[in-house]
Image 1 (cartoon, rainbow, N blue to C red):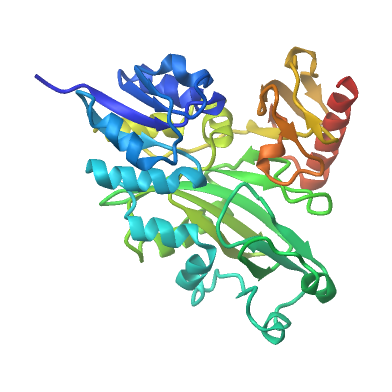
Image 2: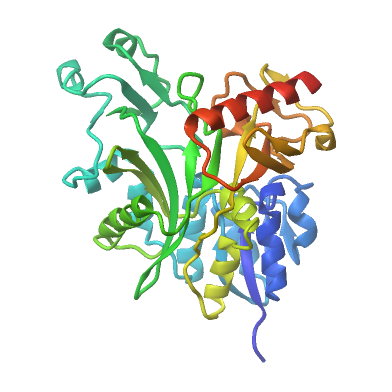
Length: 391
């Protein structure tokens, strides 16, 4: 008798619901792990265990008692990558090699992999002497050596501020180059590196360093093609298999590789935004694990899809929220389609935001034209003002 195939989900909160539904659609059974006993995705699980996703030993102990065949793990978050990688190794699953995953998660080790490449951004360990840091051109961007979610990032515009910076953890310093960012996804198999869609990322660096939104990029875009090639150059030169999340900086015609993680970009882009044009990276991944025919994820349409980040412009405790009162329909150059709350009742959000945690909600939109940085910032600012006035 054939064993039942399972997907192990590390985390089954609101954002994982599209991936949970996709697993169900394919006939896969679901083992869910979450420290929140009331996690919203629990209802989609065939087996649910109330365990912290960082507790690798306990997770291993419970899943090995199940009568079934775990074919893969879904854990699309930098914090959960160590759990996913180690559990994959313990369970005999194909995944990114442990040493490679940890090298990519450590920004200094990642820099060592790229420093001889033309797409590497000049950097220093913050513990280097002041003289070597002064070799870098202002402005500078200071970021944690480990961690994600845009947390604890600072832009330094003079050396006095750099010297006075109060550090709570190991940091690194890079030259801050003016340009725009692309967030791209790929998947490395034994025989190929598959292109899996990308977004253009919007920022307001004068206000904070959390993305204020994204929009899909057409697969025929020449800069995107060059960006895929840059990522392929690095990935094909190291011991790697599996999911690729890459952040690309484009300055004029020069492409720089900011970072790579052994996962896809977060579900807001790869499930919710991509889902607006009937694409899904979780569905693709689960099909691949099941041995089904696969193809690259592409977006070739005049219609663009994306999201706008919504922040509460004060330090607030989240109460019961009713997104049905938020504006939909035409809003400036875009059409607002729907909203998704990012924070739950009782959560505390900060202003100015310190990480992606402080995004209160996402407003999904479509547009028949690419929205420039200037126009997107105006839409972001006005939409946030409207929603904050309603609060």
